[in-house]
Image 1 (cartoon, rainbow, N blue to C red):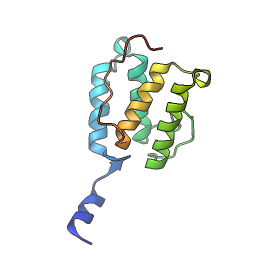
Image 2: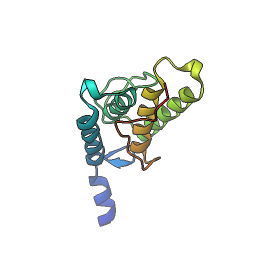
Image 3: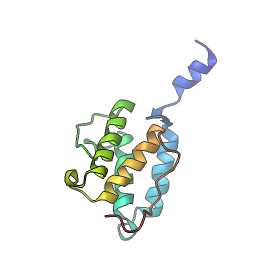
Length: 127
């Protein structure tokens, strides 16, 4: 085994990102938007996405699929896809659009599909 292979195995990944980066992103969002009076549907969704990706929830935030520990990249990707389907088809949504967008953005970042970290704010006018 080469040194680069050994060091890659030592990094604990959540999706495509180091766990420490995901923990830091979750902590920063929780600090800025975690208080009940400052939470938006978007920030709630993003926080829920992070919690699930980190393996601290028993069910996926969009599909409700059972989770036992941290989901792998395939399951994370499936949840991103499910969020996109619900965002595209309003008749499938049972929760606010901004919540689903928050879940999507957080998990898409965790998977490495986006470089944009979710913030506590969202685009005005979406529901």
